[in-house]
Length: 227
Image (cartoon, rainbow, N blue to C red; front, side, top):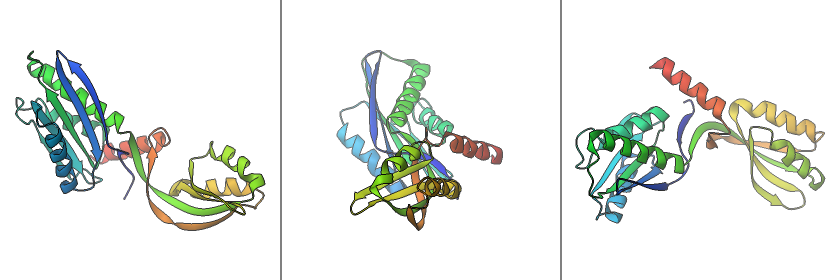
């Protein structure tokens, strides 16, 4: 399975249009049950709201897509929200946009724009990420080389995690599978072979879009070509 785009965390954002308050909520979900639970949670928390519209996608290929206008005129809320999710190619996510009616009608076009904005704002707050096949290495280096490693790592497509300061500096190196050989070689050469490392498997890990913009765009281009 190739990489896919999703969101890192649950988050919300709020704005006002013509006295109506809109609150966009987004959360990563890995099943339809999780999406429905998130929707129930928001409907309970905002049960005094006029509407709680939603859209969600499940699966790396968006195999499940559901949305609801929750009483708004047909096609003015859930579908525009789904279009935002599809355009950004966000998988495994659920978005709920809550509306408190402010007394001024927005019209169909105004509602579409408002729910589009609410969905986009929620996704931005939830931080889009790329889930990519990532190699994991258990590493250690002498203290005298740690600053050199961290400085070099800042310019490499890697993540240094789980750092422990013991007799040596022990840490976990995460690197996209396709970049693993080059990155490990660079750090090994930097430390004159004094960085010891042990492969610890491959799993899907989140990479900020800013960290993986090129890979993300390649993925989008591949998906577009397949459609």
